[in-house]
Amino acid sequence: MQVTFKVTRYDRATGEKPRVQSYALDLPEGATILDGMMRIREEQDPTLAFRAACLRGVCGECTMRVNKSGKLACVTRVASIAKNNEVTVEPIRYIPVIKDLVFDMEAFLWRKIKAVEPWLKPNGGASDREHVLREEELAEVRKAMSCYMCGLCDEGCTVIAVDGGFLGPAALTKAYRFVFDPRDHARVERLRHLSEPKGMWDCTHCFEANGHCPRGINPTDRIFDLRDESIRRGVKSGAANQQVARHYDSFVASVKKSGWLDEGRLAIESEGWTNVAGLLELLPTAVKALQRGKLPMPYLHRSRPGAEQIRRIIERAEGKPS
Ligand code: SF4
Image 1: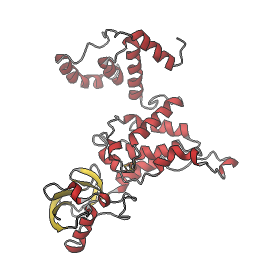
Image 2: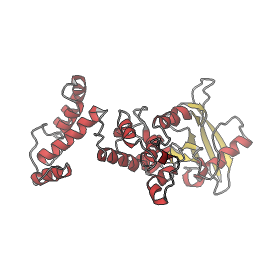
Image 3: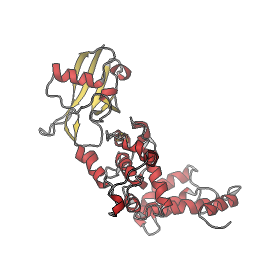
Image 4: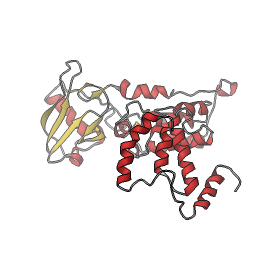
Protein backbone atom coordinates (compact mmCIF):
# COMPACT_ATOMS: atom_id res chain seq x y z
CA MET A 1 0.00 0.00 0.00
CA GLN A 2 1.41 3.36 -1.06
CA VAL A 3 0.80 6.00 1.59
CA THR A 4 2.22 9.36 2.65
CA PHE A 5 2.66 10.12 6.35
CA LYS A 6 2.48 13.85 7.10
CA VAL A 7 4.11 14.13 10.50
CA THR A 8 4.23 17.26 12.66
CA ARG A 9 7.82 17.84 13.72
CA TYR A 10 8.94 20.02 16.60
CA ASP A 11 11.89 20.25 18.95
CA ARG A 12 11.51 22.21 22.16
CA ALA A 13 15.30 22.42 22.43
CA THR A 14 15.57 24.53 19.25
CA GLY A 15 12.41 26.57 19.86
CA GLU A 16 11.57 26.52 16.13
CA LYS A 17 7.92 26.53 15.08
CA PRO A 18 6.26 23.16 14.39
CA ARG A 19 6.44 22.07 10.74
CA VAL A 20 4.94 19.21 8.74
CA GLN A 21 7.28 16.69 7.12
CA SER A 22 6.07 14.18 4.52
CA TYR A 23 7.32 10.62 4.20
CA ALA A 24 6.32 8.33 1.31
CA LEU A 25 5.96 4.70 2.37
CA ASP A 26 5.14 1.34 0.84
CA LEU A 27 3.47 -0.64 3.63
CA PRO A 28 1.94 -4.12 3.69
CA GLU A 29 -1.85 -4.39 3.98
CA GLY A 30 -2.69 -4.60 7.65
CA ALA A 31 0.19 -2.30 8.69
CA THR A 32 -0.50 -0.05 11.65
CA ILE A 33 0.33 3.61 12.11
CA LEU A 34 3.10 2.55 14.48
CA ASP A 35 4.53 0.18 11.82
CA GLY A 36 4.70 3.19 9.51
CA MET A 37 6.36 5.39 12.11
CA MET A 38 8.96 2.72 12.90
CA ARG A 39 9.63 2.22 9.18
CA ILE A 40 10.25 5.96 8.83
CA ARG A 41 12.63 5.98 11.77
CA GLU A 42 14.51 2.88 10.63
CA GLU A 43 14.76 3.65 6.91
CA GLN A 44 14.36 7.37 6.35
CA ASP A 45 14.78 9.57 9.40
CA PRO A 46 16.39 8.38 12.64
CA THR A 47 15.66 11.75 14.29
CA LEU A 48 11.87 11.15 14.41
CA ALA A 49 10.81 10.89 18.08
CA PHE A 50 7.79 8.99 19.41
CA ARG A 51 6.94 6.67 22.29
CA ALA A 52 5.95 3.00 21.99
CA ALA A 53 6.38 -0.08 24.11
CA CYS A 54 4.09 -3.13 23.99
CA LEU A 55 2.99 -2.90 20.30
CA ARG A 56 -0.21 -4.73 21.35
CA GLY A 57 -2.54 -1.98 22.60
CA VAL A 58 -2.04 -2.76 26.27
CA CYS A 59 0.42 -0.13 27.51
CA GLY A 60 -1.06 3.14 26.23
CA GLU A 61 2.35 4.61 25.33
CA CYS A 62 1.87 5.36 21.63
CA THR A 63 -0.97 7.90 21.95
CA MET A 64 -1.03 10.24 18.94
CA ARG A 65 -3.46 12.25 16.88
CA VAL A 66 -4.02 10.52 13.57
CA ASN A 67 -6.13 12.30 10.97
CA LYS A 68 -7.32 14.69 13.73
CA SER A 69 -8.43 11.96 16.11
CA GLY A 70 -6.71 10.59 19.24
CA LYS A 71 -5.51 7.01 18.62
CA LEU A 72 -3.23 4.30 19.90
CA ALA A 73 -0.84 4.05 16.96
CA CYS A 74 -0.08 0.36 17.51
CA VAL A 75 -3.68 -0.81 16.99
CA THR A 76 -4.76 1.69 14.33
CA ARG A 77 -4.57 0.22 10.85
CA VAL A 78 -3.31 2.55 8.14
CA ALA A 79 -5.87 1.20 5.66
CA SER A 80 -8.73 1.97 8.04
CA ILE A 81 -7.85 5.61 8.53
CA ALA A 82 -5.93 6.85 5.45
CA LYS A 83 -7.72 9.35 3.25
CA ASN A 84 -6.55 9.65 -0.36
CA ASN A 85 -3.54 7.55 0.64
CA GLU A 86 -2.46 10.10 3.25
CA VAL A 87 -2.41 10.20 7.02
CA THR A 88 -1.57 13.12 9.27
CA VAL A 89 0.23 12.35 12.52
CA GLU A 90 0.38 14.98 15.27
CA PRO A 91 1.02 15.02 19.01
CA ILE A 92 -2.13 15.00 21.14
CA ARG A 93 -3.56 18.40 22.01
CA TYR A 94 -3.33 20.70 25.05
CA ILE A 95 0.03 19.33 26.20
CA PRO A 96 3.54 20.76 25.97
CA VAL A 97 5.51 18.79 23.39
CA ILE A 98 9.11 17.85 24.06
CA LYS A 99 9.97 16.54 20.61
CA ASP A 100 7.80 15.49 17.66
CA LEU A 101 5.22 13.05 19.12
CA VAL A 102 6.77 12.93 22.58
CA PHE A 103 4.81 15.07 25.02
CA ASP A 104 5.41 16.07 28.60
CA MET A 105 3.70 13.37 30.68
CA GLU A 106 4.27 15.28 33.91
CA ALA A 107 2.34 18.31 32.63
CA PHE A 108 -0.28 16.13 30.95
CA LEU A 109 -1.15 13.38 33.35
CA TRP A 110 1.12 12.71 36.28
CA ARG A 111 0.54 16.03 38.04
CA LYS A 112 -3.24 15.47 37.97
CA ILE A 113 -3.00 11.77 38.80
CA LYS A 114 -0.82 12.58 41.83
CA ALA A 115 -3.36 15.21 42.91
CA VAL A 116 -5.99 12.51 43.53
CA GLU A 117 -3.54 10.65 45.81
CA PRO A 118 -3.58 7.31 43.97
CA TRP A 119 -2.77 5.03 46.87
CA LEU A 120 -4.86 3.17 49.42
CA LYS A 121 -5.42 4.95 52.71
CA PRO A 122 -6.06 2.29 55.35
CA ASN A 123 -7.29 3.33 58.78
CA GLY A 124 -4.12 2.14 60.44
CA GLY A 125 -5.85 -0.50 62.58
CA ALA A 126 -4.77 -4.10 62.89
CA SER A 127 -7.41 -5.17 60.38
CA ASP A 128 -5.54 -3.25 57.68
CA ARG A 129 -2.42 -5.40 57.88
CA GLU A 130 -4.05 -7.89 55.55
CA HIS A 131 -7.34 -7.41 53.77
CA VAL A 132 -8.11 -10.27 51.44
CA LEU A 133 -10.99 -9.39 49.14
CA ARG A 134 -13.43 -11.61 47.38
CA GLU A 135 -13.58 -11.07 43.62
CA GLU A 136 -17.10 -9.61 43.82
CA GLU A 137 -15.93 -6.97 46.31
CA LEU A 138 -13.51 -5.63 43.72
CA ALA A 139 -15.94 -5.92 40.81
CA GLU A 140 -16.79 -2.22 40.88
CA VAL A 141 -13.22 -1.06 40.54
CA ARG A 142 -11.86 -3.89 38.39
CA LYS A 143 -12.74 -2.09 35.15
CA ALA A 144 -11.18 1.20 36.25
CA MET A 145 -8.06 -0.70 37.30
CA SER A 146 -7.57 -1.69 33.67
CA CYS A 147 -6.91 1.98 32.77
CA TYR A 148 -3.42 2.15 31.29
CA MET A 149 -3.35 5.94 31.43
CA CYS A 150 -3.06 6.49 27.73
CA GLY A 151 -4.67 9.91 28.24
CA LEU A 152 -6.97 9.63 25.22
CA CYS A 153 -9.99 10.59 27.36
CA ASP A 154 -8.21 13.82 28.38
CA GLU A 155 -7.27 14.42 24.75
CA GLY A 156 -10.96 14.35 23.80
CA CYS A 157 -12.19 16.27 26.87
CA THR A 158 -14.12 19.42 25.94
CA VAL A 159 -13.51 21.01 29.36
CA ILE A 160 -9.72 20.58 29.24
CA ALA A 161 -9.90 22.21 25.81
CA VAL A 162 -10.93 25.47 27.53
CA ASP A 163 -9.58 24.95 31.04
CA GLY A 164 -6.29 23.09 31.37
CA GLY A 165 -6.67 23.11 35.15
CA PHE A 166 -9.64 20.70 35.10
CA LEU A 167 -8.63 17.40 36.70
CA GLY A 168 -9.94 15.57 33.67
CA PRO A 169 -11.46 12.14 33.07
CA ALA A 170 -8.20 10.18 33.38
CA ALA A 171 -7.41 11.47 36.88
CA LEU A 172 -11.05 11.18 37.93
CA THR A 173 -11.09 7.56 36.73
CA LYS A 174 -8.04 6.98 38.91
CA ALA A 175 -9.84 8.67 41.82
CA TYR A 176 -12.86 6.41 41.25
CA ARG A 177 -10.62 3.34 41.56
CA PHE A 178 -9.67 4.39 45.12
CA VAL A 179 -12.98 5.91 46.23
CA PHE A 180 -14.76 2.60 45.57
CA ASP A 181 -12.02 0.29 46.81
CA PRO A 182 -13.43 -1.37 49.96
CA ARG A 183 -10.00 -1.30 51.62
CA ASP A 184 -9.80 2.48 51.48
CA HIS A 185 -10.92 4.47 54.51
CA ALA A 186 -10.78 7.98 53.07
CA ARG A 187 -13.85 7.94 50.87
CA VAL A 188 -15.53 11.08 52.21
CA GLU A 189 -12.25 12.97 52.46
CA ARG A 190 -11.51 12.05 48.83
CA LEU A 191 -15.00 13.10 47.69
CA ARG A 192 -14.60 16.46 49.43
CA HIS A 193 -11.30 16.97 47.64
CA LEU A 194 -12.83 16.02 44.27
CA SER A 195 -15.66 18.52 44.89
CA GLU A 196 -13.28 21.45 44.85
CA PRO A 197 -13.18 23.78 41.84
CA LYS A 198 -11.61 22.09 38.77
CA GLY A 199 -12.81 18.74 40.13
CA MET A 200 -15.61 16.34 39.26
CA TRP A 201 -18.38 18.96 39.18
CA ASP A 202 -16.67 20.82 36.33
CA CYS A 203 -17.41 17.92 33.93
CA THR A 204 -20.08 18.99 31.43
CA HIS A 205 -21.16 15.42 30.60
CA CYS A 206 -20.47 15.73 26.89
CA PHE A 207 -19.57 11.98 26.91
CA GLU A 208 -16.52 12.52 24.67
CA ALA A 209 -14.35 10.68 27.21
CA ASN A 210 -16.47 7.54 26.84
CA GLY A 211 -16.07 7.63 23.08
CA HIS A 212 -12.29 8.07 23.30
CA CYS A 213 -11.45 5.36 25.84
CA PRO A 214 -9.97 2.27 24.10
CA ARG A 215 -10.52 0.16 27.24
CA GLY A 216 -14.28 0.62 27.44
CA ILE A 217 -13.96 2.11 30.94
CA ASN A 218 -16.49 4.85 30.17
CA PRO A 219 -14.78 7.60 32.20
CA THR A 220 -17.83 9.91 32.00
CA ASP A 221 -19.93 7.26 33.75
CA ARG A 222 -17.24 6.92 36.42
CA ILE A 223 -17.50 10.67 37.05
CA PHE A 224 -21.27 10.28 37.47
CA ASP A 225 -20.63 7.45 39.95
CA LEU A 226 -18.35 9.73 41.97
CA ARG A 227 -20.97 12.47 42.00
CA ASP A 228 -23.74 10.05 43.02
CA GLU A 229 -21.59 8.72 45.83
CA SER A 230 -20.80 12.25 46.90
CA ILE A 231 -24.51 13.06 47.20
CA ARG A 232 -25.22 9.75 48.98
CA ARG A 233 -22.48 10.50 51.51
CA GLY A 234 -23.81 13.98 52.18
CA VAL A 235 -20.89 15.78 50.57
CA LYS A 236 -23.05 18.59 49.29
CA SER A 237 -22.72 19.16 45.57
CA GLY A 238 -19.63 21.28 45.36
CA ALA A 239 -19.48 22.18 49.06
CA ALA A 240 -16.09 23.69 48.28
CA ASN A 241 -17.32 25.12 44.99
CA GLN A 242 -20.14 27.50 45.77
CA GLN A 243 -21.02 28.21 42.16
CA VAL A 244 -21.70 24.53 41.56
CA ALA A 245 -23.68 24.30 44.81
CA ARG A 246 -25.79 27.31 43.80
CA HIS A 247 -26.34 25.83 40.34
CA TYR A 248 -27.76 22.59 41.73
CA ASP A 249 -29.85 24.30 44.40
CA SER A 250 -31.34 26.68 41.83
CA PHE A 251 -32.06 23.82 39.42
CA VAL A 252 -34.03 21.92 42.06
CA ALA A 253 -35.84 25.03 43.33
CA SER A 254 -36.90 25.95 39.81
CA VAL A 255 -38.28 22.54 38.88
CA LYS A 256 -39.97 22.27 42.27
CA LYS A 257 -41.69 25.61 41.74
CA SER A 258 -43.04 25.26 38.22
CA GLY A 259 -42.16 21.77 36.97
CA TRP A 260 -39.84 23.38 34.39
CA LEU A 261 -36.28 24.58 34.44
CA ASP A 262 -36.21 28.38 34.55
CA GLU A 263 -32.97 28.96 32.60
CA GLY A 264 -32.82 32.67 33.36
CA ARG A 265 -33.12 32.09 37.08
CA LEU A 266 -30.56 29.27 36.87
CA ALA A 267 -27.98 31.52 35.20
CA ILE A 268 -28.50 34.35 37.71
CA GLU A 269 -28.49 32.18 40.82
CA SER A 270 -25.52 30.10 39.66
CA GLU A 271 -23.46 33.27 39.36
CA GLY A 272 -24.85 34.56 42.65
CA TRP A 273 -26.72 37.84 43.25
CA THR A 274 -23.65 39.46 44.79
CA ASN A 275 -21.35 38.61 41.88
CA VAL A 276 -22.00 41.79 39.88
CA ALA A 277 -19.12 41.21 37.44
CA GLY A 278 -20.34 37.68 36.69
CA LEU A 279 -23.92 38.87 36.18
CA LEU A 280 -22.79 41.63 33.82
CA GLU A 281 -20.94 39.05 31.75
CA LEU A 282 -24.23 37.21 31.24
CA LEU A 283 -26.01 40.28 29.92
CA PRO A 284 -25.08 40.13 26.19
CA THR A 285 -26.11 36.47 25.96
CA ALA A 286 -29.31 37.15 27.87
CA VAL A 287 -30.27 40.07 25.60
CA LYS A 288 -29.66 37.98 22.46
CA ALA A 289 -31.68 35.07 23.87
CA LEU A 290 -34.54 37.40 24.82
CA GLN A 291 -34.58 39.00 21.35
CA ARG A 292 -34.88 35.59 19.74
CA GLY A 293 -37.63 34.49 22.11
CA LYS A 294 -35.42 31.80 23.63
CA LEU A 295 -35.44 33.10 27.18
CA PRO A 296 -38.70 33.50 29.05
CA MET A 297 -38.49 36.21 31.74
CA PRO A 298 -36.70 34.79 34.76
CA TYR A 299 -38.92 34.07 37.78
CA LEU A 300 -42.10 34.56 35.71
CA HIS A 301 -42.30 30.98 34.59
CA ARG A 302 -45.80 29.52 34.20
CA SER A 303 -46.23 26.16 35.88
CA ARG A 304 -46.48 23.17 33.59
CA PRO A 305 -49.30 20.64 33.91
CA GLY A 306 -48.46 18.17 36.67
CA ALA A 307 -46.12 20.60 38.45
CA GLU A 308 -47.60 19.72 41.82
CA GLN A 309 -46.90 16.04 41.26
CA ILE A 310 -43.32 16.84 40.22
CA ARG A 311 -42.88 18.87 43.41
CA ARG A 312 -44.08 15.92 45.50
CA ILE A 313 -41.66 13.55 43.72
CA ILE A 314 -38.75 15.89 44.48
CA GLU A 315 -39.79 16.24 48.10
CA ARG A 316 -40.04 12.51 48.45
CA ALA A 317 -36.53 12.16 46.98
CA GLU A 318 -35.41 14.76 49.50
CA GLY A 319 -36.88 12.65 52.28
CA LYS A 320 -39.74 15.00 53.13
CA PRO A 321 -43.13 13.43 53.99
CA SER A 322 -45.68 13.98 51.19
S1 SF4 B 1 -9.80 5.97 31.16
FE1 SF4 B 1 -9.47 5.02 29.13
S2 SF4 B 1 -8.90 6.73 27.76
FE2 SF4 B 1 -8.70 7.49 29.88
S3 SF4 B 1 -6.53 7.16 30.35
FE3 SF4 B 1 -7.64 5.31 31.08
S4 SF4 B 1 -7.55 3.84 29.35
FE4 SF4 B 1 -6.96 5.88 28.52
